[in-house]
Amino acid sequence: MLTAPRACVLALFVALAGAAAAQPAPAPAAASAGVDVKSCEQARKKVAREQRTAAEVADTLTKARRARETCVSRSACARYDEAIRDTERRQARQATRLGRFEQEVAAACAR
Image (cartoon, rainbow, N blue to C red; front, side, top):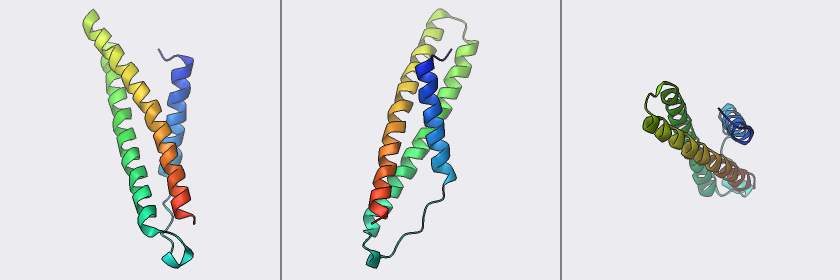
């Protein structure tokens, strides 16, 4: 039921989430190395928060798809279809935001 663009967005999101989850967070560098520890930690917290939200949205999408497979009435199926479309759009936005936050971590923690 996925179209090619939706499948690509979903694959991108899963790849980003998997790669981010698989990488351990580097240890905080010393302040003498020119790294602003506070901004680095804040950036890391934003990434962690976004990853948790992305996992919740993925669960919501899975539940909506399962419910759509078993819906009986036309109106219920339409509601599930709309929920699935909205969730997929939300996932795409979150994947973009997660990428941006990871770039912020790289910039803030690599100085």
